[in-house]
Amino acid sequence: MVKITIDPLTRIEGHLRIEAQVEGGKVVDAWSSSTMWRGLEVIARDRDPRDIWLLMSRICGV
Amino acid sequence: MSEKPCLKSYSERDVSRREFIKFCSLAAATLALPSSMIPRIAEALEKGKKPVLVWLEFQDCAGDTESTLRAVRPTLAQLVLDIFSLEYHETVMAAAGHQSEKSLADVVKNQKGRYITVVEGAIPLKDGGIYCTIGGRAAVDIAKEVCGNALATIAVGNCAAFGGVAAARPNPTGAVGVQDAVTGITLVNLPGCPMNVENLTATIIHYLTFGSFPAVDSLRRPLFAYGKRIHDNCERRAHFDAGQFVRNWGDEGHRIGWCLYEMGCKGPMAYQNCPTVKWNGGTSWPIQGGHGCIACASPNNWDAAYPFYRRLPNVPGANVQVTADKIGVGIVAATLAGISAHLVGREIKKAVTRRRPSGGKEGKGEEKMNGIQEKKEHPQW
Image 1 (cartoon, helix red, strand yellow):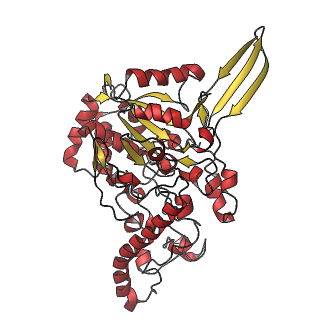
Image 2: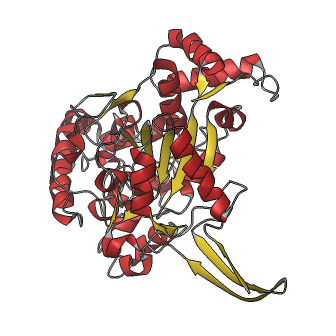
Image 3: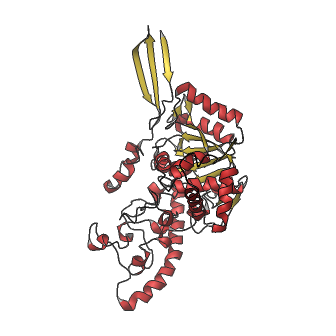
């Protein structure tokens, strides 16, 4: 049994880590983790609703 | 530096001599250099050595990457990738995992003190920096190593420069800009949300041409790009002076392009060259598009310029009526507007200093920088 870790996963927006368990040439289990958090949902709390689109559009610039 | 000249292959890339010189002229114009400097820029690009660049992404949205990839000035998309050798960039590189991290480590080891680091995104310091890790390492540790061994670091976007949106109240991850995470480095800030690629290209071209980075203000922002107030260069300024304001979205004033001050435009407190350089290859910019400025190149704008749709208080000249006999008053008020905006800026700066989660100290940005001409006088902040 081999465990493969790919971190960072490139050519995507954001930060992603993939771990895969390989048995006999087949992936039998896999885990993905997003390795970055800014907490925009926390930042949005108690703000003027009219401003939220400006804030949330910063989730992804792609 | 790579031994390869910057632009040996421009002709091989379907770029004519004429287009190449046009590109050099644009760079000179962005840097506010006289046209006599164009041949020197062209020579530096043709004969100079190509700098190695590594692009780090931390708490980002890849908006600055997109801004760079979307460069559409004539031939810029072709030329930008020729000006520097991009050795590491998560969003565009082919390698992944260990392979990509090895290429970064190789640059740090083999090009020590010679490469340029571009940082995009904020750096979280809370809880040991666990809110952003790459290859199992915290962003702050990567930044210290990679920026610490670089010739210079360019922080692109408001997040990398000042913490940006991630650092907005209540700053859940303790996010800061590069200047608050790594000390003792040569740093140029190119804030904006996103930064304008024209300014990044111009900064690099300045370095290639003169061997130094452009003069910066106390926030380490190049004066060529951040030396002038949006409000003073705004195409709608005449409407401000004449007291012609948009009062509601979609009203007649909005349709014919009157001043957006009453709708919360932060142009009077913002410094950037958007009105002249514009976006999308000089097509337009937010105010031309009919929306107010959100001061995206200012420190902590998500709190300091907030709420975005509330008008800035006390900018004299803003309530002058549109009668012929009062136009003279408008002109006087316009002169006063600059003075007042300075005061508004000072108040905001105080608020920023109070609110900064990292306990940012006043004048922190005024540290002496290696190899960077520093000009301390700046009208605001």
